[in-house]
Amino acid sequence: MINQVASGTAALLLMQIMTVAMAQDDLSVRQNAAASVAAALIQELGSTLKTNMAEDGPEAAITVCRDIAPTIANDLSLEYGWKVTRVGTRVRNTMMGIPDAWEQHGLAYFSAEIDAGAAFEDLDYTAVITEGNQRYFRFMKPIVTQPLCLGCHGPSEALSPAIQTILDQHYPHDQAINYAVGEIRGAVSIKQPLE
Ligand code: HEC
Image (cartoon, rainbow, N blue to C red):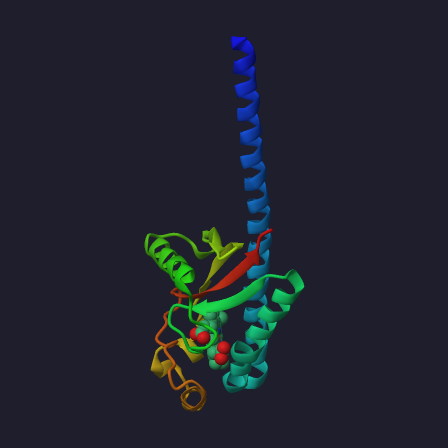
């Protein structure tokens, strides 16, 4: 009788462990998928920016960060059924780039880790959250400032007069300057509804 109870308890425990393991598996599958989507966005943005800057100069390349980045993010959102966006630590586009509360925690976590010596490529930030009746898987990957970014996000001496004029015209509330190479510029943020 005691044995039966013990083996019953063991079986129950085993089931619980398996359930937790399966849930973790599912999350790690999601995490890997989100990581590759974020990497695809960062990679595509970087290479499109590079090509456009080389071919048409920085003034024309403004459209990459302005129009193409949201388009790529939008295409990825439609393709995967997830919300894929870019947020900034200091923001140029106040309509699209402002992080929500969860994303602000993620950005603060990334900054602290980077200050402590962590490498960008090793960092991500994930959680399962509930809003109303809906659960979501959330994922963030940091975006680092590269030399290529300084012409539009660097200190004011790095911005050409032409760029400065365009920025003043389109983004009167621009905060996204004075970044240094290696500093966190923002993050790709992904939100997936869970069943
Ligand atoms: C040619 C100018 C230009 C260059 C170069 C550039 N950006 Fe931008 N960036 C912009 C503009 C303009 C916006 C505002 C886009 C919008 O309206 O949504 C922006 C917005 C962003 C945002 C969204 C958050 C925000 O501030 O609104 C991120 C993140 C970002 N840029 C990262 C980068 C990174 C990283 C690089 C270098 C790899 C880079 N940018 C290079 C012009 C540029």
